[in-house]
Every structure is written in C-alpha cells, then in structure tokens.
Image 1 (cartoon, rainbow, N blue to C red):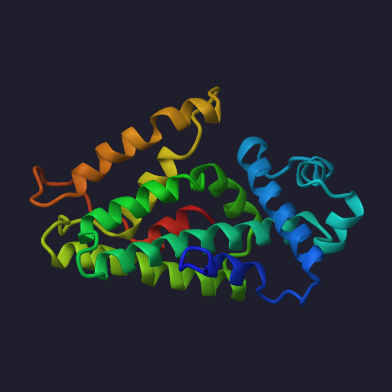
Image 2 (tube, rainbow, N blue to C red):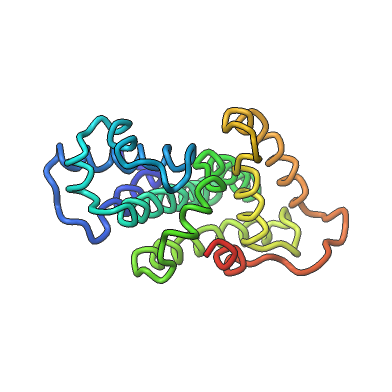
Length: 227
C-alpha cells in the first residue's frame, strides 16, 4: 500500500530521469541510498568506488546512472528532501484526522522522524555541491516549505506553539542536533539526539516561559545558511 511518506521519495527519484527497467531502477535506488549513508559517515569526497561497493553494484553501473559526483549528490539531496516532505505530509494527515494526533504532537513526530534522516550531517554536502537554483531542487524545497509551514500553523492556531518561532528555528535545531560533534562518532550522537530534540521541542510549547532574544529564524534564513 502506498503511503504519503513513500510517494514523494519515489517521485524525487524519478525527477527528470529516464524511465528504467525494474532491475535498473533498483540499482539506481541502491546507489542513492548507499551514497546517502556514505556521505553521512565520510563527507562529500568519499570514493565513488566505495559507494558502488556499498550498493552491491559495479563501478560501470554507478557511472551509467551518475556520470559524475555532482549528479549523484543532487540525487541524494532530492531523495532526502522528498523523504522529509513525506514525513511532513504524513504528520499533517495525522493532525487533520478525526481522533488523530494533536497539532503539536504531529509536529513532534515529524521532528523526531526527520532527525533520523541525518540532515545535519548532510548540510555541508548539499550546501557546497548542490545548485540551490536547480529547478528540481527549487520545486521540492518549495513543497517542503509549504508542508512544514502548515504543521507550524496548525500548532500555532491550536494555541500549542509559541508565537515567536518560525520554520528556521525548527530546521536549525534539527540540523544541529543531527550533526556529529567533532571527534565523535555518529553512534554516540544517535544515543542522545532524540533526548536533546525533545528538550528543544518542549521549549516551543505555548505558553512561552521566556522572551526569546532576536527575531524568529525563517525558512529562507536556514536555506541561505546552507548555501
């Protein structure tokens, strides 16, 4: 059964890509997923041979699908953004369903699921290797902006989200908490990320217990910081 969380991921994989045989499609998906994990662990310059090995394909198969590193990194960026979009759409459906999760609970579920995508570890990869004005990137980014904005507005309208926060506040926190600290392993981060994220989310609840300095960080602020 197709869900809202899986549909966008498949569509992002097929953006501007030729139709492939089933086995070729599976190979392409394995390469992109292997590349995502390799970029999280080793950064953008991990050898492409290592990615092919992780994906269980030959080097020729990798280069047939992705002629250079830039095209592979773009495919990973589209995949990750599409998966996060799917999480936002699922959370929205849960918030809107009769007897479903409340707006803030839905927002929390989205945040906890999103940090599992290791967005912080990938920010540097995407920010330096992906063209922010590429039409495919702009399209998925705009859809993500709208979906997460809807989650925030639902929680704010219900009186559950403090009024002085915006998209960027949430995305900055998720990125920082899912980015490995210097000289630590991803495994050490995984042990504490959800605990620390929940501390942050509790601070978003209304009524606010303090006055925040400065202004809310917007979605555009977050995007500009990662270019």
